[in-house]
Length: 43
Image 1 (cartoon, rainbow, N blue to C red):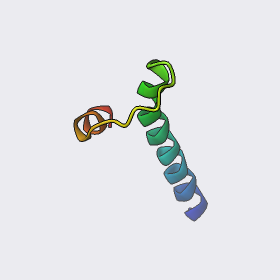
Image 2 (image 1 turned 90 degrees about the vertical axis):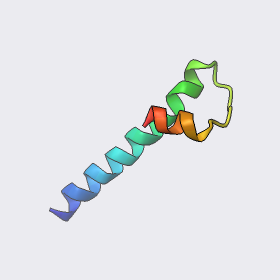
Image 3 (image 1 turned 45 degrees about the vertical axis):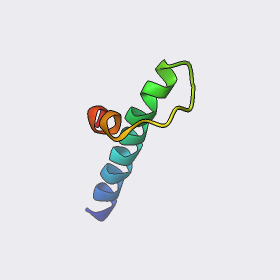
Image 4 (image 1 turned 120 degrees about the horizontal axis):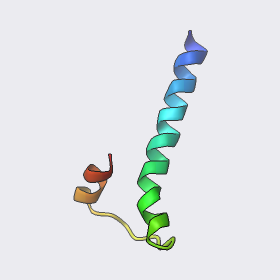
């Protein structure tokens, strides 16, 4: 059970990181720091 929970947590963390970096990739890979509004919009 603990392994299942840890896997789901890891997947959710990776998913949230992917979602947060997706707009950067769509902007041509420019590492532009997003504002709090953008961070809240992409979550």
